[in-house]
Length: 313
Image 1 (cartoon, rainbow, N blue to C red):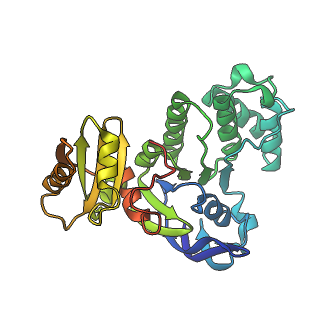
Image 2 (cartoon, rainbow, N blue to C red):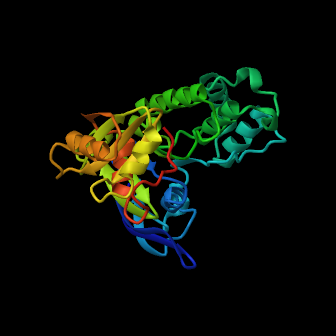
């Protein structure tokens, strides 16, 4: 998959701006970003559901949007919101989707039975989709999106409404699909999910601000990270907020993660000195960057130094 200068406007709003992207086959590629960063719009552009305002993309050898109709038979798409028919049973939904993809009667029956078993839907086959739990709906949506054995699976924040165990089970199912040869592109705002991806694109207000493997992004961060522990974490926040050398402060219980420019020498000592000047006793030590630190560092421009993000741990 390759995008070249891909852009999309909605009136005066630039949802995606000049996106250049390369996604190799056989990997889980993630879009990480808060709400409104352009993740969903980018996925819709890549599968031909939206026309670009500028630029183009080539997906599985097909030009998008020009050859989008032929591409749709090679991809699976799972939307953020449950999009199957709630007044139809699990079995009826799967049969309907299989017919849309033109599967023969024999192949439909075979694929549906395999999906019921693979996604633990057998006991729910006669139940109306509208009565399923969030995790059960998620499994049904994934089953429907993969009935035709797509080469590429696009997932738009697929785990936003399910519990942690369902999320873990869902990712196990994704890695099983990956082993079978499916390339997966998934958007998320969960840090633990982003770390599961082989490669990440971080989007901010429609712009690609970072791209790489999670470990490499953490190693390349242009910040030093100091862990601060004190009895008065909010006082630490107030003392450090607004200082030129402090790029971000994030509170985790009684601790604070403080980001400073990499050029600052002895960052832990610098933070300790600043706090002592404010009359605050605290333990300060250097620590390794997290993926959330990377996100804060690359999306900070124009957002304020100590502002929070919409990402979820």
